[in-house]
Image (cartoon, one colour):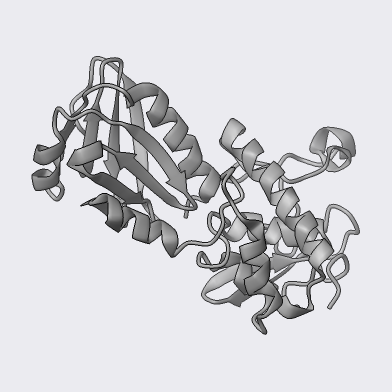
Length: 269
């Protein structure tokens, strides 16, 4: 599932390419046809993101809410537009570019209050300048739930997914099973600040990189990571491989239906 940096990257791209002018909206697949007809020709006021949610604000015409889920993705192209390929839920066509949305979990037209209600249910987003990290700390500091589970709870902290969760815990030597209430406040502040830096870098580059310079392939001589997600990481999807810091085999288990990765030596319980 795309993590928060992907949605913020899309919001910036759509803001630059489509906002401030009328856009053509259609639904070649047909599942968004009624809503697309209402929006066709309207001006996209603003594209924004909160956590793993993308919002296209059309002012009085409403707000399109997109959640990509596991399989959703946008395909982008420069004008002139090409014929749609596959099951395109929503197509946007602007003056210079077009964008096709396929396979999202959510693609719906909402009123502004309905869109605000979705945001209100989400935890602070490290990529938003209006984020209030103290709200996340308040939830963590009172919880008996493991920190690994809390980091994935979008009501506690929005935008962080399986990759950033595993990597920020490793980078700060935190055992994933430690309870939220047992995490030191100063440690949490360091983790939050680290997420801000890592995720902003992800917005800029379009990939997740968490490895310090001294552990990069060109420094250590190891082979670069081969993974469809790209990026150099410490533990994510490296189960059974040696830790890049201590050499211990990276461990893997399942937590709340998702794979969890950590180093038993660098993140002792």
